[in-house]
Structures are given as C-alpha cells and as structure tokens.
Length: 257
Image (tube, rainbow, N blue to C red; front, side):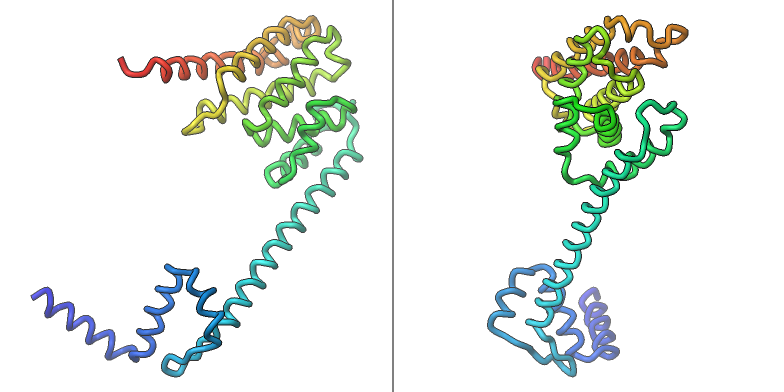
C-alpha cells in the first residue's frame, strides 16, 4: 500500500512537471550540497542544456565571485565609515560636559561600537592613557562590547588609575564607565557565556585591583549620599561576579564527588 501511494505521488509530480525540470531541481540540490564541484565543473564545462534551460556554469561562478566582492566592498565601506564617525565623535564633544550633555555622545559611541572591527584604538587608549576623550570613548566601547578580549586592558587601566591618589586626574564619570565596562564584561562571560573564558589568574588580578580602587580616597568620596551610584557600585558588583566565577572554577577543578 505504501509503495502504491508513493508511485501515485511520483506520477502526479511527473504529470505536472516535465522530466527536465525535475532533473534540474535534483541537480541544483546536489550542487548546493556539493559546492566544491561547481568550481571543478566550471573549469571543464562551459554550459549544459537540460530541457529548455541552459545552465552557464562559468557565468554562475563569475556572478558568485562578483557578489562576494560587492559584499566585501560594502563591509569595508561600513568599517571605514565607523572609523571616520569615531574620529568625528572624538573631535566633537567636551569631556567636561555634564553627564546629561554627554548623552548624545554616549549613544553615538554605543551605536558604532558593535561594528568596530579594529579595536587597536581601544586597546591603546586603555593601556597608554594620553587624553580624556580617547579614554572615555574607549571605556564606552568596552562597556558596549563586553568582550573578554578587552578584560585585561580594562584591568590594567583601572589598576594604574587606582594606584594614583588623584586617579591620575581622570574624571570620576570616566572611571565609573571603565568600572561598569569591567562589571558588564564579567556578567557576559560568567553568567551568559556557555563556556566562560576568563581564567583564575585574570579574576584574581581584577579582584586585587578592585580592592585598591575602592580604597582610593577619591572613590570613597564619590557619591557619599549613595556610594552604589558612584564608582563603588560597579566595583562591588564586579567583586561579587568574580567570587561567583572563582567558585565555578573551584567546583570544576574539584570535579564530581
């Protein structure tokens, strides 16, 4: 009975579609599953005729190649536009502006942060503090990206800041943004990543740095009315996530009982 139904279904298809169309469909499916044969085939065969349809193999290959080039060019255009936009942002804002007045700058940086392919600017700004504009932009990008790849750079930057009694003269809001970037990176890796990548050494180094940061006199005076709204907030939350990360690593090392 099942075979009879199958043959009836096959006959129905052949009644509605010509045999060359069915053969072409099967051939296209085969090519999709074996794309490497398209390259080999196009080297030896210029075209083939199936029913009333002529397949131009070399033309298909060239069209695919041209489409890939267009995609790559568009990607490069986006990257160049983002880099140019970042330069415009750096030139156009006042690092001493109020937090409210920095809102547009903050949103503009957050908008381009996910699409920045080259993060060397961020790494350099965090590792070698030169000017407040670059550091603030780097802090906002790191905060938006939440990438463990920037974790060590954030820790190094905050460690140098924490060791200076005056926080190297860096604005408290920028220090808060850096600390928040650290906090969000920890959450992304420890809570949301199926395979956290931050190591015990990295977590311990960050925890030691945060102890110095919290103890800094300027940080202690930041938002005395509600310290959690100042630098101490994300600093303490970061320490909480570090403790969770270390506990997970300890349990993994201990293994099943």
